[in-house]
Length: 484
Ligand code: GLY
Ligand code: MN
Ligand code: MN
Image (tube, rainbow, N blue to C red; front, top):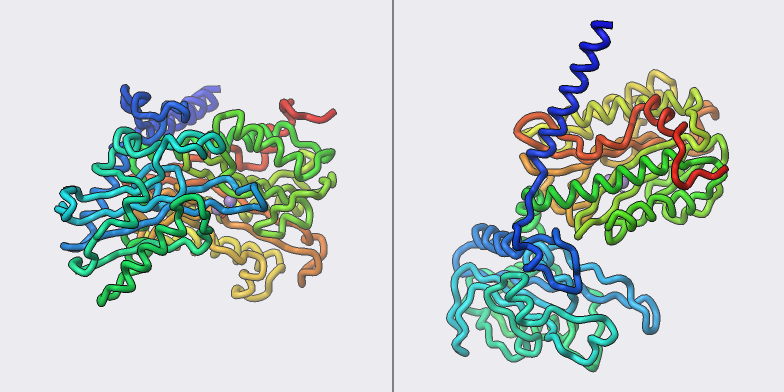
């Protein structure tokens, strides 16, 4: 009894210190007056503050050499068909530097203060769509020029029409850094859109003698900055991860083999929306049976079978930040012996990977550690005969950065405090594989989101159970969507 009590206390203390650690690392108190900074139609009180975006521009300026300018375009609106567009998704780099969530805009960030011939003096210029236009009746109010200055904190904002006539004298800069030029901008006759902005930049550059730099901004400066998450970002990312874990937990409690894959998707995506997440950050992967072996499976149409595993690889997007958490579940609530064996190799591999999530390690150290465990496990089972055959059954990297993109920007060098990355090893044995058929159609992936700190790694998605026993226990409970 004493031992039990002691270990109970020990686990309790450990758990509270982990929670405390997470709270210290990721809790950001949004400014008290922050709601005033929000734009009324947006309603949310925990949007990133203007200071976050202006600090990002300052950080970029520090990386830029003297006498240089950086130019970035917003995303294009993508047409789905006829009058219907896809949901607009802002370019994460553009968002990171401006906070603007509207299309058809361009931003210029100068290393030094510029005195333009038209009397404007500034080190940054955002050109965006003006507000108060008749077309707002279709798509809602825009932020406009004053809104951009008041809510996003840019020093100077102007209408896109002014961009076309503005004389930038790019010739006088030693370096002109340009972000990715969107290839999908469509020319809409009735307004000055992204197509016109790009065309105008092209015209201005065609008169330049010097080469413009199309790689450094998005290939180096921005990944270098974005791979380190600030407290405000960690707060939103943690919220996205928390919502995603709750969705995985509800799925575990509700799952029965009577569902189809799309019904399991409906459960998790209901949980996302119901908790305030705007979207899934990527198409939900709900693959059962043979579909567990399709890495980015998204059709999600198959009915579950009672002997199936289900891979649920999902991520809520909350105010732009995306979680990415995978759990593999037995449709009937109990793993078979073969499923258990494969599952536990992946779990051990993941744990080995997480332990390598330490400041100063190479980015790929977690992958190498996970691969070593999977290789030995598959060799022991006779599923592979030579170590190099491991890639037949584990054919992807086990980590990527996480943030504004699910596969977020970063330099993939050494791990640093403030990085958030996934650790997601897997084993996939499709039907017809060169091994005992008892292993066929077993696909297992386990994915968690790990924050690098000065001390031990913090598993931000710890809340969603991973151990077989914990999953099976949770699956005994009654979920809100349980079918009879
Ligand atoms: N959800 C896609 C991935 O895990 O990378
Ligand atoms: Mn992932
Ligand atoms: Mn994933």
